[in-house]
Amino acid sequence: MDEAVGGPLVVVAESAEVLALPGLGEHLLSPVERERAAGLRRERNRLDFLAAHLLVRLCAAHLLGVPVSEPVLVQRCPDCDLPGHGAPALAGRPGIGLSLSHTEGVVAAAAGPVPVGVDVEQPGTGRGDLADLHARVLGAAESAAVAARPDPAGAFLRQWVRKEAMIKIGRVSLDTLAEVDLSALPLDAAGPGPARHRHEDLHLLDWTEPRSGALLAAVSTRPVRLVPLAETAGAVLPV
Image (tube, rainbow, N blue to C red; front, side):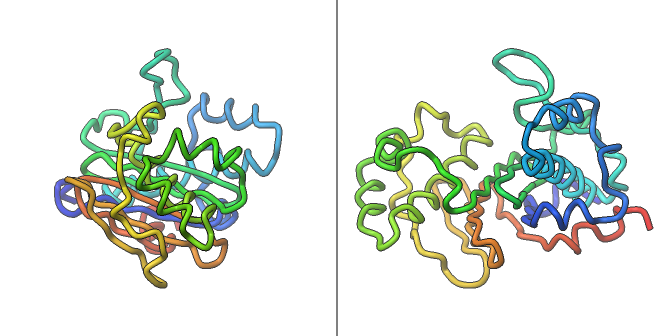
């Protein structure tokens, strides 16, 4: 498969769906990932972690047209230079962009021939005091638009996942979130399918997962494709 053709793909699914797929399991994870999973105190968090780290491998395998056992995921923090956290990457394939995210019972992952960022959040999972977050996350125009919505918490979450996805491609940091003005983007769901927007040179994809209500955002310099879990699994999983 030509890695330069097409844009990144993103998949969002319930953790239980991913973990139920045949051929997926902890044996695919690195020792560092297994150690991190084992250190999580809540079983629900451990399962979400496992599902997200397996799903990103599934996305990479689908993108490359290889068995799911082939992609080797690595993570190394640019700040402390320690493995096991930081942005995910594929060993030996520096041109492939990866991203993953998990929330309560829902996971998302992305893979593409260019950098891609994805974030998924469940409404009501808690982000501290909303008013306190506004000043750190939203600019003045964004904050006014969010406050005017019938559901300001939901509107804020929509901007939050967009900006979290932008963090993951290195376009913004936690300290500069409020400097990125996304007030021109709509805060309402466009309908049952994914909504697509532009911000400068970036393509943004918004979606609300219909079963869980989780909000998803994916960002890249190329259009992002939302792909069903079953299609992604396809021929990359063992029979």
